[in-house]
Image 1 (cartoon, one colour):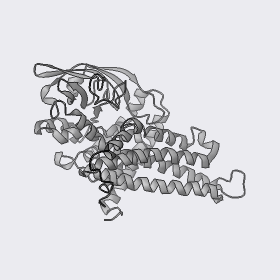
Image 2 (image 1 turned 45 degrees about the vertical axis):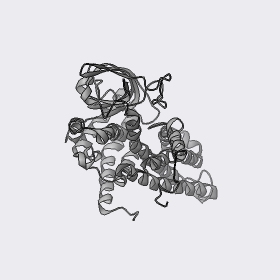
Image 3 (image 1 turned 30 degrees about the vertical axis):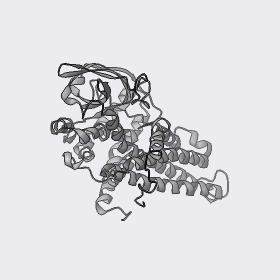
Image 4 (image 1 turned 135 degrees about the horizontal axis):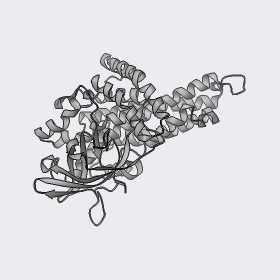
Length: 409
């Protein structure tokens, strides 16, 4: 077991960093200065197309399904490099990482061929969305009647389902133009229970009502919307697995994305630390020496650095488990999501204290990275509503072994 990057991973890091510096640095700056959410999202399209041309989108698709995805550590390296510049861009392009997981798990060969094909392209800007969250909240989507649970319905009509409901928060629910993404995996209630049905762009076009575009304090480049699905007709052949299997499939789909939040958190902390550290090295604040010479400042920086490194290694392990199919992947993903996201908020807030009042200026980067970090405890399954409840269920499950995840049992 080695914690050193391989030559191939070093190359991946450099290629990812070069792409970020060439295409994402200026994009992030442009997004910060654009007031309209729709126009902000459109700013990302040229970089999106460049990423597809360079093969990065194929790199999100597992090799058995025609892609070129590497290990979980490879994914963490790419996410950290890109999210350090533009986490919203990473979220936008990474839709297939969630939406296609149930396809890989239970899809028929024909379903796999149809639904994965758009993301093996060498050009364009194909997007996918996991239509899970609903405007009224989805922490209890699996609840049985008389609770509402998931409110989107799939009603059989001959050889089709007719889908109606409202969805929110997933990036690119409207696609680029309001007619939907290339693939939308819809969490809905069919006669047999909570189910997953995939709709393609041609089935969504003309049946999406864009109700609202969210104007977020951070992750501003994501096209984050609330939409209505109105009489979307989808062949019954697009049902993934069986009716009623949707709860398990949905939860599995968010294991990898939960693990990735640890790496998003690292990216935000990394950038915030860099800003605070440079400030401490150069700023005297009217004193005789740079403020890093004061023990209180050095202690905050040392603690922050240790917590960044701990979160990075935890996130590598979690993404490795998620992408390799490790049976302990859920626990690792939960730790990375909860610990990583909450650590990021605490660390960046501590770094604000190092800089002082200057950090409260929008032109100073710490405020921006704190806003990013504040999103991470509540996206990809909120820590209180979803992720800590999942950890509680693990801890109280029959035969839970506290040493199993570490391999030390």
